[in-house]
Amino acid sequence: MRKFALARPAALAAAAVLLAPAATPAAAQEVWRIGEVAPLSGPAATVGTRLNKVTKMWVEEANAKGGIAGRKIELTTCNDENKPEKAVACARDMIEKGAVIIFGNALTASLRAIQPLVKSGPILLIPSPNVVPGADTYGFQVSPSDVDITEAIAEFLKANKIDKIGMVAATDASGEVGVASARKVFGDEKIELRLARIDLRATDASTQLARVAGSDIKVVYSSYTGGGAITVVKSFKNLGLAQPLIVSYGNISDAFVQLVKDVKPPRLLGTGVAGIVPEIVKDPGDRARSQAFLEAYAKRYAERPDMINLLGKAAVDVAEAILKTPNPKDYPAVKTFLESTPIPSVHTQRFSAKSHVGLDASSVIIVELKGETWVKADPVK
Image (tube, rainbow, N blue to C red; front, top):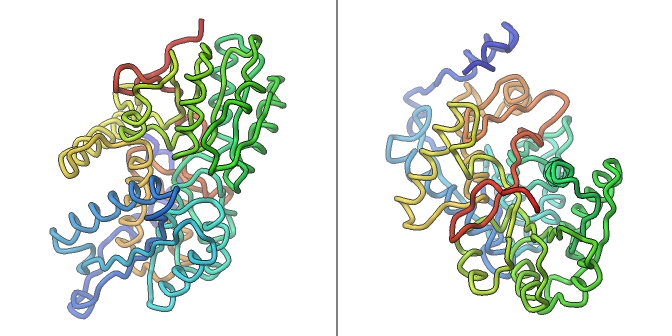
């Protein structure tokens, strides 16, 4: 790919060495121990189960080919139930058993609780946009940050000459991140923010929407995922609101579409990375990899892949690159490798010594539900 050619010669030389498989007869009898922390039950299970499907698919496919660098993968998945204390217990057990990589397929509070445990390794791969691991850590985030996502919304608003937005955000840790991003980004862009908060367990959002969706508000944004997002959509419809409603990237799924198809507002928009609509991806390599994954996932599970699946694919692609280095347990060397080497995926991940977030706002698009398919959003009239 063209951007590989722009890398420094020293970085390319290091990448060539690190990417070379180093299997030996002794290593061939061992396994790669990989951990996965994910909420597989409770309200957050919609996130954990979708990421877990991609992780399992990768493990099965890799092991069917004989493994990676001469070793098969042994995956341990622990259900943290979206409880930080459970996530800590899961991660600690994985580290004690020699996991070389941990997939942090969890939500914000759990990920924050895990991070101190990996200050000396192993590598923690993070699909969530809400954490933004420091460049001095062993955490690497494969999604754009929440600030990046909010910047994409701001660009969409500016392109449509809109200077006000209503927002409904949850009261949990993820909601706090969303509110902080909104206040910063919309404030910087001189976009007026009208905000209401809602408990994740709420079954009606009419009060919050009435507060933020006045006649002068042309777009409303619901920043959270799962059951709460469905509550907002239903209440939006019940109130007869006509503005476009933007939902969080975590809701760009077939399951969400099926749950809201009878109550969706006139225009339902969402945030997502461009790979969810491959035909608009500019880089031909990224476009081909996105299309190939979407087709392979649909064939494997007989369901449409979604935004969270796509981020799960980015995480396993980074994991595979790590396992192809000479010593994935040499965490400082792996950290340097990831910081200096673009990782081809559905969106090429570009970490650096200054940022452990592999994507930025340029990878984010605003999509719109038409029928049962997400496409690039039309302008707001």
